[in-house]
Length: 188
Length: 358
Image (cartoon, rainbow over the protein chains, first blue to last red):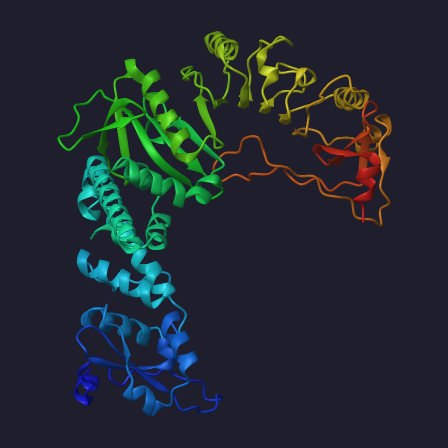
């Protein structure tokens, strides 16, 4: 992977904003970690911001990286598009060390972006952001007729479900037959 | 966006954030979808206390407008509104197969869908909706149909209990006739509320009125026109202008002897004009006392029926005085405070009851 300093700095908040700390609190140097998505652009994120993600938080706790090791080994999330990971990183930075508000109005309005964000957030186990996203997905069908809901959420009809089920059974039958034949061949 | 591509827990979280009204419409999209809703929302649906069918506030004098909602202490979660099809349906109306019957729906303001139907078909329309709800929300949810103010229509359906709410009888004999008609043709009523009973006529002791599980009545006194003595239900809330002490004493003595009020759980009588002579009544009913330094158990239970935004439980009785029923040794806490007599029957015997005193 091509982890570059250019990638680090150009990838939105290269230097994440730190939450104001109380005057009485002792100064503890903040540790940073690095993540990248499908586009290989590396994002530098503070441990505090990453605490929102149960998955990454678990990885950090288990690995015990030094800052140098963390820089050399960014966490790869090849299943997440670069712009979606950027949204996630921005959200984690904005809500670092703060109680999450009851609503979040800055989520993407486009269906496909929201869909990808839900999958990414679910994978990264960011509970609060997942709740906001799911609320927004639920609001998409508020007051809609069943046919409108079907279109928005691409829900198959009963006939399509039945056809898919038949197809799946057929495939499973073929696979089972193939396995039986292979086993018989092996026995010979 | 394909909903089925989301993991089950994400789908559940999305459905958790939808209103009952939206879930109801979503359930018509496909059989699979309906099953996902039923399985993922099973816990939420089990928490539904009841579904209420009531005249819509939009037009109180028109029985043809009805709303179906899930009430709570703080609000009404409307699932559906039902409308008379007197006006032409809008162009964007759609049809749904509700328990085997095709019904017309259209979107109205206030974020709700309504089902529009011809009044001639109302019996079968409500039957279809009711059956659909039984299957969708589960048959453990109570369904209550409210008959308001002498508008006598109610569908005769299994698992649909009847609530009668009257604002007053007036002196109109026609109203009384209507009331008698509704009562005699009703299944056992769950709750009857009469805001003020001013009719001169009285109800006969054998009237089905007295079989209601719960009644809340405001009238001149305890015995006319509704006679407390004939009540056979579980909960009663009386408010009278005046009351003879004899009637209160007779009530308690009949309960103590086991002669009447076997099913009674809670009684509340408020006398508006006079304070109740506490000591005299307590002496005459042979009340027993709990040591004043000790704490008696508190009697409260869920009301058979409560209106939205009202307390769901009976007012707590925390009394040092009680009486015991001779036939089964069961206890009733009795509290008299200024104008209110409260009576709460325990399922415990006297020994069990005293064991709860701390």
